[in-house]
Length: 342
Image (cartoon, rainbow, N blue to C red):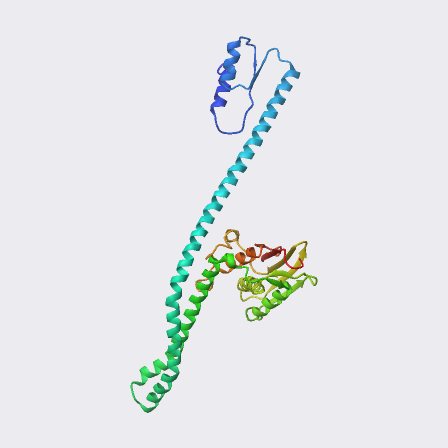
C-alpha cells in the first residue's frame, strides 16, 4: 500500500458518516503497543498480527458479522420509534385541532340559531300573508288596476322566492343540527333498549328508497339468528341512512348495487355495507371521518355525516371503519360490542 496505510483507510472510512457500518480488521506486522492503540483510535474495530491464522480470522469476522447485525437491528428499531413518534405527534395535533373545532362549532351553532329562528318565523308569516295578498293582486291584474308587468312578475316570482327562503332556512338548520351533533358526541348513544339490528337495516333501506329506487339495487344477507343489541335504534338507523345515502351518491346516475350483510360472533355484532361505486381515493381515506371534510359539491354535503356517525357508533362502544372492497367500491364496517343477548 504505497499511498495509504491501513490506518489511513480506517480513518477515512470512520470519517464518512453515510452508509452502513463497515467492520474493519487490520492485518498487521506491527507489534508495538502504541501502533495498535493508534489503529483502534483511528477507526479499526480489531486487528490480527501476521502471520495470519485463518481459523482465528474467521472467528474475528464472525464477531464483526454479529456486530453488524446488531447495528442493523438497532437502526431498524430506531426508525420504527421515529415513525411512531411522528405518527403520535400527528395524532396529538389532529386531536387538538378537533377539540378546538368542537369548541368553535358550539359557539357558531348557538350564534346562528337565533337569527335563523327569526328568518324562519318571518318566512312562515310571509307565506301566510301571501295567501291573502295573492287574490288581491290577481284581482288588480284582472281589473286593470296597476301595472300589469309588475303584477305578473310579483305573482310569478313571489311563491318561488318564499319557497327559496324556507329551503335556505331548512338547509342552515340542517347544518346547525350537524354541528350540535358533532359537538355533543358524548350524548350520541341516546336512550338504549334491546334493538333488532336487522330491523334497523330494513328501516334504513325504506327511508332511502327514493334515493335508491331508480338506479341502485340493494341486496341483503342478514343473519337470521342475530341477537338483539342494547342500543338506540334511531341513532343506528341514522348511521345506516348516512352510509347508504353516500353510497347512492358515489354510484351516481349509473346502475349499481349495494350489498348489506349482518353477522355476529361472541359479544360482537357486525354490519358490512359494500357498494359498486368508484371506491375511496387513498388521499381521501385518511380524512373520511374528519368533520367538515367532504368530496361533494358545494351545497350537497356538510362533511359532518360520517363524523357524526362515527361518534354515534363509538358512543355505543363500537367502531366504524372504511376501506375499499374487493370489487373496487367502498366498504363500511360497523362493529357493536356487548348489549342484550350479544
